[in-house]
Every structure is written in C-alpha cells, then in structure tokens.
Length: 173
Length: 161
Image (cartoon, rainbow over all chains, first blue to last red; front, side, top):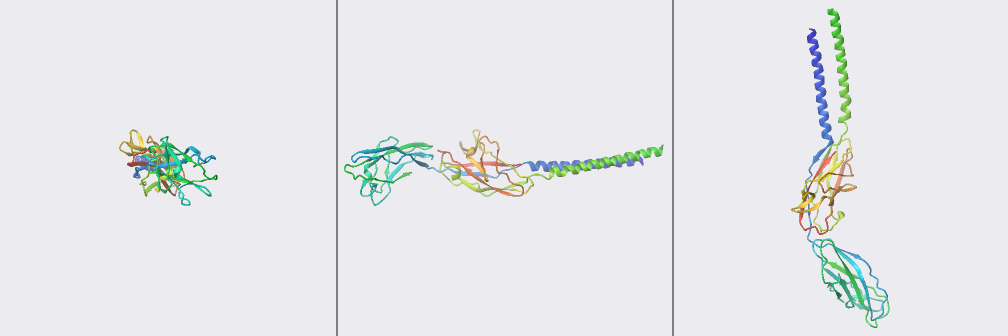
C-alpha cells in the first residue's frame, strides 16, 4: 500500500515534468518561428532599352560686345554627356521668332548662316537660317562620354548696333 | 514504528506536493514572457516588373510603387532584411548572362530607401513593419551609364525578424 502511493506520486511528478517539457518545447518552437521567417517574393525584371541618354549643361551663352565686321566666340558654350548605351547624334536649329532664323534685334537680325558651332574640336560648321536642323559632325559616344560645344557669330559689316538675342534647340538622337 | 514510518511518508508526500506546485508556477511564469512578444509578418507582392528604360537613368526614373506589401499581425515591430540570391561572378543583382546590374543599384523602402548589398549579404531596411499594421514598400532601380540593352532578372529574399 505504501509502495503504491509512492509510485503514484513519482508518476505524477513525471507527468508534470513531461507536460512542462512539452509546453516549453511548444513555446520554444513558437518563439523560434517568430524570430525569423524567409520568403521569396519572386523575380524582378527590367528591360534596358537600346538608346542614347544625353543631357546638356549650359556653360556660357553671353557674347561680349563686338564691332560690326568682327567675330565673337564662346567656347565652350555647353557640355553634353551621354549616359546611354548607344552614341548620340547632335542637331542644332534656331527657334522660329518673327520668321527670322538667327539672332534678332529690335530692328534687324543676323541670319543663322552667320553662326557657327564646333563639336569636340571637330571643326566649325555653319548653322542654317531656316527650320532645318544642322547635324554637327561627330557623335557623343555612349557610357558617360562628355563633349564640349562652342559657338561663334560672324557679325556682318555694317550690322546695326543694337542688342541681339537668339534661342537654339539642340536635339540628341 | 509503523505509525512513525507512516508519518514520515506522509510528510515526504507533502514535500513532493510542494515541489510540484513550484514547478507549475515556474511554467506559468515562462509562458507569457516568451510567447507573447513577436512579429508575425506575411508578404504580398503586387508588381515586380520595371518598365523599360534607358541606361543612365536614376532611382527616381525607375520606380515600382507598392511592389510588396508586408502585413505584421504580431505584437512586435518586424525588421525587414533583403538580399539578392541571383548573381554572376560573385556580384549579386539583376542579371542577364554575364551582364549584371549590381544590387547597390537596387533600393527598397517605404519612407527611406536602402540599397541592397553587392556581396549578397542582407541589407536591413530602415522602415520596420509596425505591429498590427501593413507597410507598403517601393522598389527602385538605377541603370548604370552604358548598361547593355538587355532583359535583366533578379531574385530577392526577404527576411523578417
């Protein structure tokens, strides 16, 4: 009778310890699971296009005063950097303003054919006095190549003394 | 003698019962301290496809808004760690054959954008997922200048803790 009671007590203790062990195991499992879980959300995709990606940075656009019959130069006037993966062509044209394509003053104008541009020291090339773009010689290479451009105006003899202004559009393609 | 022995046995039994009670009390103390606190985060992704774009474009030019949504139903904030598993030549990122856009050109975030690591190790995002909330994450990519015109794919792994 005494032995039976003792056995029951020991069995009760073992059962309690076993229950606690199971609870602790569950808690530990839940705890570990809450610490970290890895997930693969899938695959990201991207298509890089085949294109030039050129940006222009203006450096200087103000000519100093010049006498009629003389030339004024700004070199460089702007810089262009091509971050794309193909080389870029450069086209330049004057913006249409009062139907004149060139420098315009209050009473007269200087035609675009009197204006030259130079790309990367490849030689001076005259612009047009129309809506037609002038494609400059040479391209801007890909992969962050950076080229300088200059501008020169030949003021015709007898040109009216006044302030002239012009806007050009540079297109990269 | 018999009664004395019996008395001793009864006393021992009481001691055993007291020990039992102590064990149960310890068990009750451990349970709320360990199991109550923890993040419980699941992931849902709505878009993983960037639009085609040029080489030399920046993070702000290539954005997937709501790329992934993380939901934390736990009662602790979740820290989010991300790494690429796709690689070439020991550099991890978006790949096409031997060409790669390295992971440092790829950023994740909700309010703060963290770039991933080129060596494949996890990058811990600044934006945690608060307990009981959803957090929407953007994916951004910067395409290096001169990057060859190809289709790139990359696999990322997200870890919550």
